[in-house]
Image (cartoon, rainbow, N blue to C red):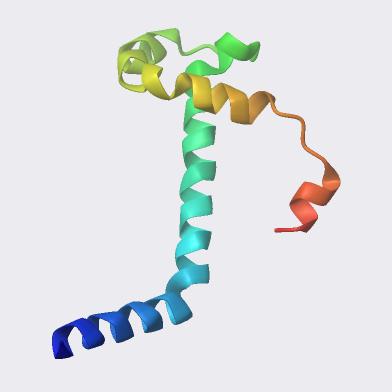
Length: 85
């Protein structure tokens, strides 16, 4: 009973103090992954690059993430989408 209440209190303070910080780190990680995937799979959406050897070596590792990444990259964005963040 005491351990459960301490765990709940710990989770409450973790959410209170670290939620925005962890959200920011998650957004930065997603941005860096998008840049990496753009360099790796850019020709598949029409952005040319020169490093084909390394792209072919890394392609099997990232081919599962391609559909979700393509949907994020090709999606139209509005100015007000960025203002809300």
